[in-house]
Length: 268
Ligand SMILES: Nc1ncnc2c1ncn2[C@@H]1O[C@H](COP(=O)(O)OP(=O)(O)OP(=O)(O)O)[C@@H](O)[C@H]1O
Ligand SMILES: [Mg+2]
Image: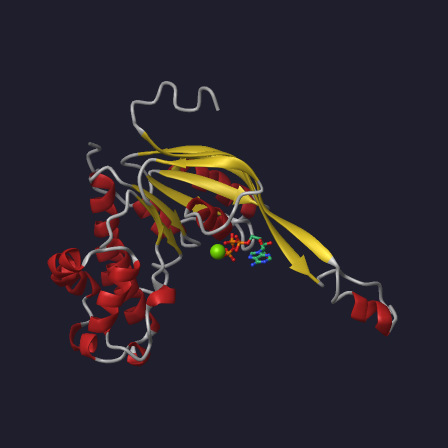
């Protein structure tokens, strides 16, 4: 990628260079109708299929950019984010990140039987915050989550929206250089959308980079400057939000939300 960053006034934060990600699956082969039971059984042993989830994706993200990632179900969005986060190996290609890349999702670390308070500490530790950093940011997390007295109840008593608010609040407390959000904003109410939008703008303002996967075109439109469109694992468009969403609407027949004015955040 000799010239990928040439001419840009912005500093690159993430370089994704011809990335391919494959999954290996077992026993998924389709058999002809009337196949014998022995061949059906054999299907479960030894038959390996490769799913080419991401195929030759390249782009450069910059400090201070908020990028939306759109595409049909199964187009490879989550796979690409997981590869960038280092949770999946690439079959081919390279990923370079300037700083920490964190995929929003402290899900695995949180425990439904513990209170929100305890989960804040648990989630923040899982994200690598020190106890001192947790003490310093605790009130901020509580504020952003905005779930009131539910904070003292076990998470199993939360609605899905409340859980999403708490997870978002914990995850963004780690202030990663590159924050990746995979559909985490989908379940929130209007107030949460507003708060999370502000938090995303704050991260971008401090010259972080945000990669946001969403099927909600209005969320993408209100939070992103630029959009990447994946289709069957390939990048089919990369450009300013309005242009890509228009093309997406034309090609897929999906209506996209009308533009709403968005406060511009300065890029440092
Ligand atoms: N663990 C897995 N093992 C095998 N194949 C997988 C696995 N996870 C995803 N895939 C396949 O990889 C492809 C890309 O999936 P991915 O989850 O990245 O899509 P997506 O764009 O995030 O979809 P969605 O919008 O539904 O979340 C799909 O064909 C999917 O079936
Ligand atoms: Mg996904």
